Length: 104
Image (cartoon, rainbow, N blue to C red; front, side, top):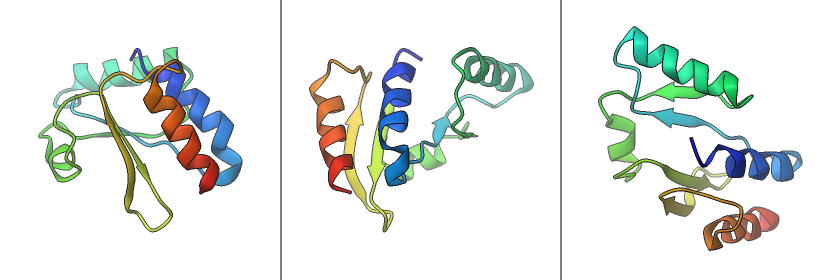
């Protein structure tokens, strides 16, 4: 949840280039967890869709071993950048993601 402001900043900056953010969470096994995810999305005014991955299938396939993890996919669906861990606008990873998105 601490990374939400940085993710929103990337989306706002690069939306015109076609950037779309999709959230994936391992929560969602039961109604209580689904409510938690929905509440967090509303609290942070997230417009990105969030998909539930309670058994970790997507995370394993995407090679995201821990949360949070971030992938930038190019227009062909290939991984252009991977960052595992919190994302903040002051981090090198945030600047690297911006630079990649500027070129896309």
